[in-house]
View 1 (tube, rainbow, N blue to C red):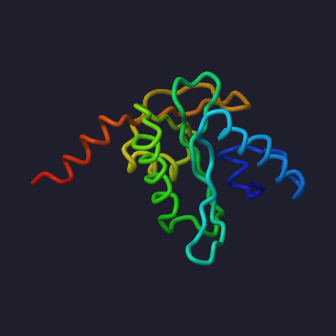
View 2: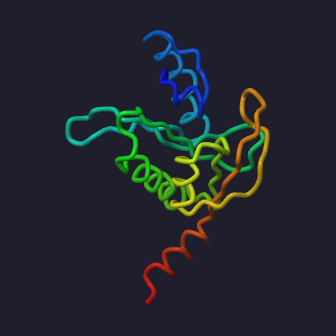
Length: 157
């Protein structure tokens, strides 16, 4: 959470120490599981358990559906971990949580995130102002109906 890419695309969460990180996990990340039944999960390598990032669902004020969030340690980018995690979280959102729709927000110039979202079936909807500093972010969404249609197209013919 203290890497330059995280600060650029996600934001500075004010984490400067282990105590700050522990407080952030308790107060912000784990509390969303208690409040909403979903939140962020740790992504780690099997079987050694090396942490590579986080991925999960958030409930943000002003958004009408849960939104997907993810971040990787930079040394693990480009290896398919985010794609695998996003697929698992989207599947969990639809099949286990029964969500009809999942949103995602990203900075418009975050080309890696845009590619990941579109490859996972998300579609661009519009530019909104939901970032903490008020800068415009791109809103994407995916519905269970769209995922089912994409799956049937991929298995047909």
